[in-house]
Image (tube, rainbow over all chains, first blue to last red):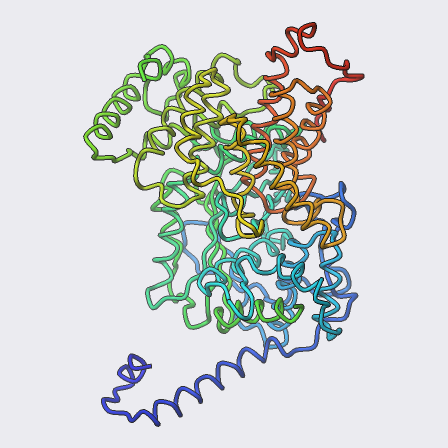
Length: 344
Length: 276
């Protein structure tokens, strides 16, 4: 509070004035959050449907949950045109999305997180019923629901770290947009998206996406996903993500190889070749950096140059940038968490 | 150390890959790093770490793909394990997950490279990171890694108790959400890794082939992502334990000397066909 006051050029302020200002700020923040969280839940038909309802039929991150009867996240956020001249392919979503669309996006991401965590267990039903205004959980059920929520989100009495929360929500947004595979003007077809980690305390690549390209072969993109909530230019975060990707790529790919190469067919073959394709900078290999941020950080100039710096020998088409801009991303992430908590 | 620095071994593992250090350069990198560690000035060159993971990747390709000769894969396991061994000694591996990842990569490399005592030594160094807290949810993000590392240590005096406790805790969590197990949930792969590793332990320690079949079934489903989303490291562990099960089956005294350790014959192969 003192730093905020100083930044406003105020040198003297009484304790009571500080209290009043703090209370007003709290009210404004709560109001903003409520604009997302207090929206009525989407009708049941609008919720994504998953093939994960039967154990053993779990489809590993394939296109198993495209929205039925509602807008996709890409439609809710809206695609905007990118900045020309960047040394990578570039997609921009969210600029100008209205409050209603953002509220739906928040609800969609919260539901994604819980579907991923709960799978076919009864917890998902319990959580949804409570989220939609059902009665409180019994004393037996409450700990079970908490067990599926507390990682990363934390619990109301012990919230998780908000920076980590933002990073996790940025990953959820990227994962959904990628699986929806909005038309990007290329001829490639989405073939496989690796699962998103349910915990920020796990490590590994943020995501590996496999496409079938024009010659029929499979190609991959290794992604790093970050949130940006800093006074520094967004390009700093892109640069950091790119360097991290460059440093850790072989570790991520070697780990993917272990289990991916047990799959049969072209996908298993691609997983078997990952590290060779990577070190040879083969055209079938590539990278991506995705950033989720707030509108005030929207770059006025190209911000993904860090990708070219970190991967100078890759072609432009082998470097991909994705920028998701919402009005206030930290509030967006907190709103996702608040909806998750309404199911407690 | 001598074996890991053997030029022939390094050359065999690298197989002339142009974008990686040559065998001689790698030998120099390894020697210099070991000297620095001895002098307590640990700095692991990024090129060495990259080489370790590259070789781990080569070694990890499922053998049925026949992409690389088995001899090269074994050499790659040994060399990468030695690099991860050095990395584990370096002080920068500060998080539990970091240490467990390096420990698992090193220990599985040593085991699959026929250097079993080195694997046991690696596991002893991270014993403190293998835990069994009252609340299993307190360490679910690392539990599969813990189970994998613990198994590779093969300290049977404590392993049975440890796996019994983890299994009971996971069963209780599944029961609380009205499921027979945690399949399909975010914890499904971890649950399968713990069960698969426990079955494998019983096969390795007591020669129970029924347990081998169960281990193979659990670990195959876990490695191929059939049991739940979002557990990249658990799938990595599962894939390597699955391969280890196959190698142990082929080389097990219980398989080689069935008359000494009679067990009911398996009615069919425990090894599944690959998933499309």
